[in-house]
Image 1 (cartoon, rainbow, N blue to C red):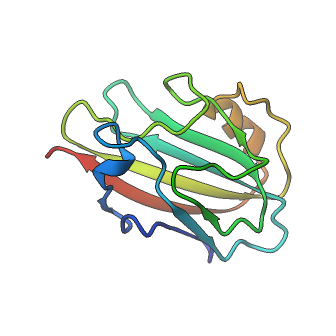
Image 2: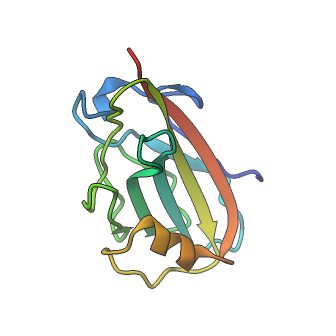
Length: 149
């Protein structure tokens, strides 16, 4: 990974996500801050996933075609002119952490891309992964933890 950074004022990397951003709270997206987007970036994509879900990877939120100058995603709002794909619940919106048991990792992955993507909002993470192939300039990761009391 390079210089690009993804952080949140709501929680530190590998820290606990506050309940406000989960199904136990208001189920709204936390504020995210983006720094040091590399030159040549045409768009940004973001994926939030839970690799610890009982039935395999669970996608909570996917967005793409964010402008390369996007510096933050404000709490409880997606940026304008962004495409929001389908999460594992089949919804085109943020779905907060909601683990059935134990503490799970929630990984926010930010991708700097050398193109904008021609993908409809009906696209899933798998379709996004295919569309991004060979277009990722850099990736930044932020991990939050939730569950387990």
